[in-house]
Amino acid sequence: MERRFSLWEGRGWLTVREEQGRAVCTAQLPDDQKGLYKGWLTGAGGRALLGTFVPQNGALRLERTLSLEELKRQGAWPPEGGQVVLAFSFGGETTPPRGWSWENAPGRLMGEPLLASAAGGPALVRREEGGFSLAYRFRPDRPFPLTPLFCFARVEELEGRPYLRFPFRKGGCPRLGEL
Image (cartoon, rainbow, N blue to C red; front, side):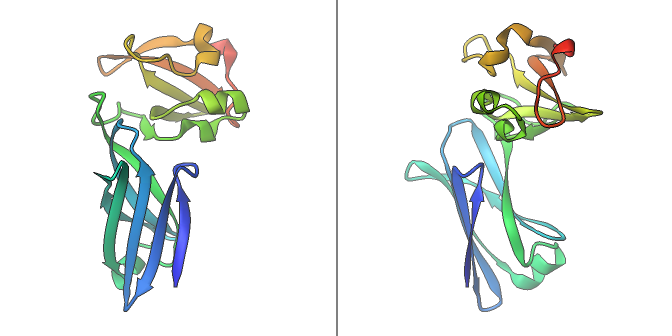
């Protein structure tokens, strides 16, 4: 039996094939050149690390075979999907600042389609009362993130580095009073 799951807002995929007490997992993402990505197999009770995607034939690929017993212990069997996380950014950020986490596809958090299409990743996300904030590394040599909110960007320093912070209400609408 083989199952196929969408990854990274449909830009990638994960297949899981059960074979003699083992799960053969294969995944692929487009190579965005932004960093190293790790993949997980997710289930109702947890997730299991599959490993790091590696460049191969113009894409990022991951192949791993794990025992079903180990996946059951980690709550990832039977599988319900997969997760992808930026583990190391080629932009220099290795660990997110305290209280923040990496979000590879911040557009999925947006309520407005225009903002969703403008919200490239990766970005930092911090859950807050009444919503969340996104933060993008401020880089004058790179395109400006979330261009529709250009005038409302707030420059903040997080652990010694400049970031552009954008606060949002639940559902992904900007909290303009705080911008």
